[in-house]
Figure (cartoon, one colour):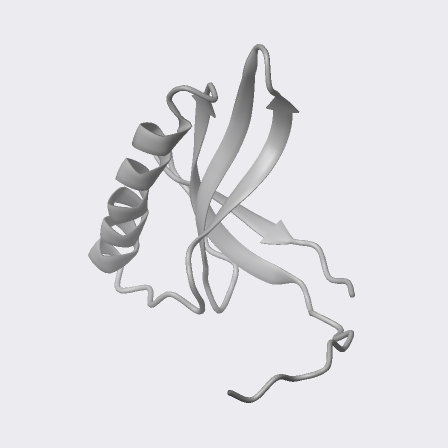
Length: 94
């Protein structure tokens, strides 16, 4: 097995689309996985290919009251969202 040394990389801004959800620690495991197919279907209906693997973006973490999470997929260029799917950009950085 090849083990690489850790290294720091610079990442450019990354456009994405996502569905936002309010969940609790009890519902996170059932709600969020159901949203991945919806985001990919939305992209497919518009002929927009994913530009990377799906992710979960945590906007609010309150373990007692709830979490606000986006189930997202990177795209190559900024697109317009709609009432179902939002469009955003992950900030550049290290």
